[in-house]
Image (cartoon, one colour):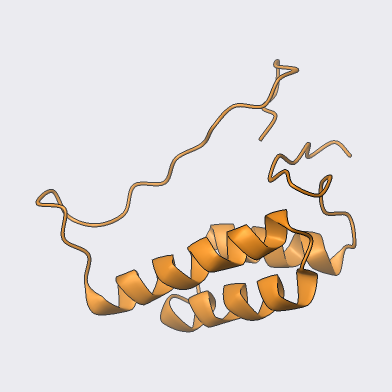
Amino acid sequence: MIVQGKTEPVKVYELRGRIDGSIAGPERMLLDHYERGLATYKKSEWEEASALFGLALGSDPEDAVCKIYLDRMKQQRPPVPGSAVHDPKS
């Protein structure tokens, strides 16, 4: 993601799970679908990526990151193939 005041992308992390490192069943399913969705998104496989992000939302309908990727694909302006970097100004 390119944040305000920067020209180079920065990594953004979302904390998931518990302090002990365990991840509950529905959360694990969401993360599995998300990781696979992101991998297909980076390969420009939009239909499969959309399906996987949709499955992730089945575990957590309010997951903002999955919604962002689905919205980008609906707007038909995903980033360059092989990159998950998005400039919100473009």
